[in-house]
Length: 74
Image (tube, rainbow, N blue to C red):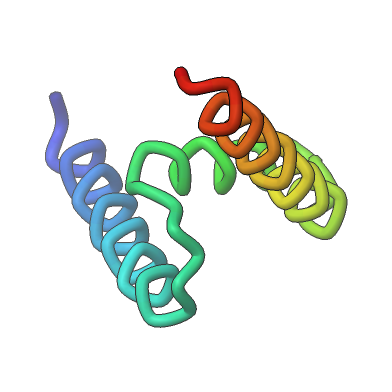
């Protein structure tokens, strides 16, 4: 691996660390891996607002399933 590649990887990791810190401050409840996936999707052209809406909908559905399972005694 060249020095340039190493520098690029280090810069990307520092950027992700900073984004994760901001994510934590905003209480997004995204882990680093999920945040990295979201950043990659946005860099690939996914609309950030649409991505946020999908994440919110998935969380609502998961919460509903958790409530249903709790009511069913699971």
